[in-house]
Image (cartoon, rainbow, N blue to C red; front, side):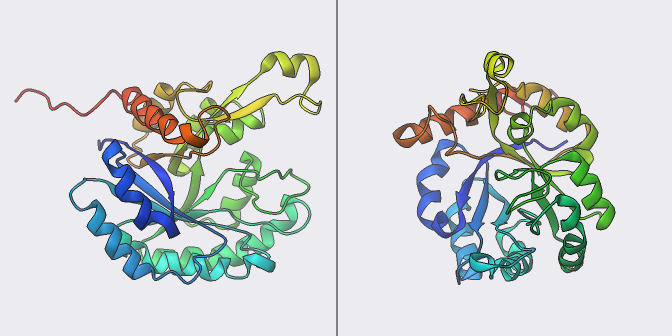
Length: 293
């Protein structure tokens, strides 16, 4: 069993600048992300420079991510499909076999998005398989519901069943985190037990649910009832999450998704992230210690 790495997300365009500053904190993996487009970035040169930066650290690139609406390709999403293709083609240069992002969605219900999902990701899954690459879909609703939304259909387990029935390729799965499910008042632990075989990457993001507000005001009132949190500050038992992952042979990473915590933000962002890094390492049992020979 390999050690589950604990890392963080870094913007792909800023990675060469940011990584040298945060590698010394002890992050073991980095997920490089792009919003809607890789924007003409020379991916081969970027991969070369990042490999040089990480060479002596032991850290790795866990995944590449492209987050936009690939199904419509409208407006600022016009380059999103080509960006998926580029990242699939260049993933091996970064030392990773995983490309992740939103599924996108068509106007209207999730049901109406499945035919286009089948068309687009059926082809992308084949392209990825030819290059030894896996694809994973983040479970963020981006403010969408079952009936409407602009970004992503992969935020509900019923949608996952529909997606994986539509494209049954073994190299497509989930980039999962408990936070997005808790925002929908879904218990993440039994969900993880059921879906762990399809989880290729985990985002380190938690949530705090104010059950007193839910009971008094419900979820459609004027008071916020849930907050995104960095691990170690929220409600989730990450020891249980890591145990379930290990019991099922997961050997990927948990990459902290920062810049969401309502307390540890701004000047305190990296303080919160490093706390989460140390907390998650402790939840996995600390550093690996070899047995006596």
